[in-house]
Each structure stands twice: as C-alpha cells, then as structure tokens.
Image (cartoon, rainbow, N blue to C red):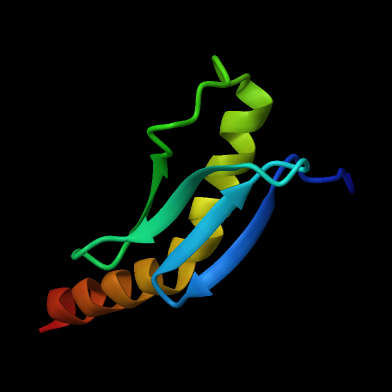
Length: 84
C-alpha cells in the first residue's frame, strides 16, 4: 500500500524533527530524549482537536523509524550481555 502521508517532517537537527501540517502549521516535535529515544511532543499552542487513529498511526510509524537504529543498539547490547 502506497498512501500519502498526512504530515510533513522537517529534520531540524539530529535530535529534533518538526511535525508540520500540509498547510505549514507546526503541530509538534519529535525530540530525542536523554534515553536516546525520540518522543512526540504536541505543540502547546496547537488547538486542532482530537487525532484519528490514522493520524496516531502515522505518528507512531514515524517514531518507530526514528527509534529503529537506537533500539537495535540497545537490543544488541543486552543480547551480548546475556551471552556472557
């Protein structure tokens, strides 16, 4: 399935990605926290109402992509620890 995304994502730097509507409004950010994982933070000024499951699914998929490499590093570390 090749569906279009609901949002645009702007990489500000290696630790911050903005989530932007098609009309150009920044609704939130995906920010890398101290644990190395990215989290979604809704812009406190966003007043767009509730999110559908489709929107939440897209945000989740984007976070999963951003966290994939770090998650693999963590899993590899613990897999090696178990072998010791």
